[in-house]
Image (cartoon, rainbow, N blue to C red; front, side):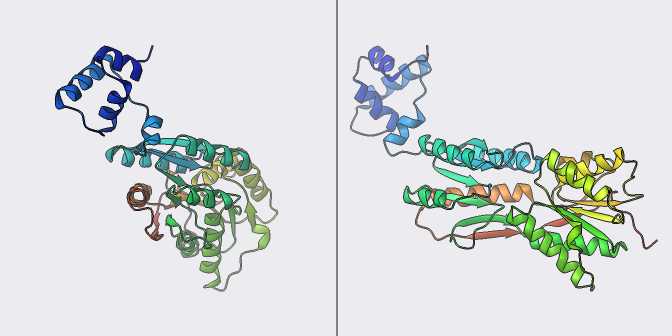
Length: 334
């Protein structure tokens, strides 16, 4: 059985209160007693409960991370980067994937509160802002990651999605494409901003994106399949498609292959994120890269600052995306 504080107290011949004082480094205890208790703890391999530490007002050195779908490679890579950065500072992560469900969002936030996490990184598009207000009322620092709420003066770490969409549009126009389509997550602000940036790039060249060529789809395999099929079955198929995530783009390439439509010979594709999907895709996927490592580093750094100083005003960090060119876009100007 796992040793308890009672086992330590009994073997050391001291009270439970004395062991607690040693664990929490409080109270007046002789150095001899402290060393004796520490030795017994080591012998028994006793690990103090993080919840017990929280109840004494101490940090638990845990951070909650809420993502919409861990199956999405972007969030999987984000989670890994966050964990690596957290470990370097002595923190561990509790990862929660909501699968876009409101009920799960609420359940996981309650779970993280019960676990007494020191702070929370939120990458889900929360359906109810009441949840954030609840965190504030309990003085739990949080960071909005890759999302934003203009009505809140919260800490935010995100990518310039508007700029990313603009880069994608400019690149396809530069390669001679004029008949275009886009698959995007309209439920997420990032998806809407990427669409807005894409449309702006086209508008700068006096080109209007047909509303029928804008397909709404979550970044999930089944949704992406349906969206891809809609475009592939169009009477006048576009020469290029901008997918708002690499997962959607990779699914599109696979669906095109099934329909005997070759990428980029018959249709070009550009993605967003620069995840492992972009590298493994055949052909290699041209994409707009998010600086995942930097996003994670800034998120952990900002959250730890907020944990140390809960009253600090909200700060908004926006990083610039870049275009990574591979082989999925055909140059029609040649």
